[in-house]
Image 1 (cartoon, rainbow, N blue to C red):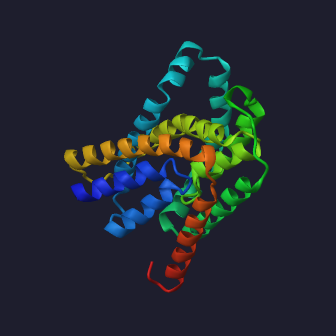
Image 2: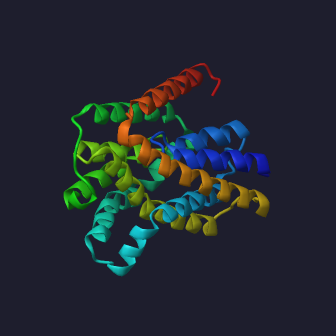
Length: 260
């Protein structure tokens, strides 16, 4: 059974890596492997994602209120259009990506690919678009990158921020829209996970461990969202690219030597 210490550390991992461009799913896979919880996961993952969903809902409470008041306004439509590619890819290829995720065989390469995309997007000419200048075409383009993050170690936030930079959003706006777009994506993932739990076996987790994992994920997720938006105002994504390259290469070496 998941201990309180394990729940705490997994909550930290999920909260931070969900919104930093380094892949939360990939890091959770590594975290569960480290704690020997490789088969523990669906209910735990669901509670961890509920935590990060709560975090981003708090950060974007004003935008959510705007969507409630204007359900067919531009912001609502941007989120709908940006979410469509991930929904289509998820429905068509969910079984394939589930098998890839469970095996972890490609995880090292996925971290490396994430780094390449981060480095490339950070190297192009800086954009100037703000939130009120984002077009429906921008939303669809960014959403298409989000769909590619169905691979476990390809960062959703990393690819959507990168896509925003490619579409000439300024750095702060790219991060801002990326995290806003995460709301329907995370919420949809939670609904699907609940459906899977109702139809299959789930491992037992104590109420205290569940609460710790969810709360820790929410707290550190909130910190990560606010920090990342401020970080990108003046800093580069390249530091994250270097980090995931080192991590990916380390995993590949460990897989080749039989350690991992």
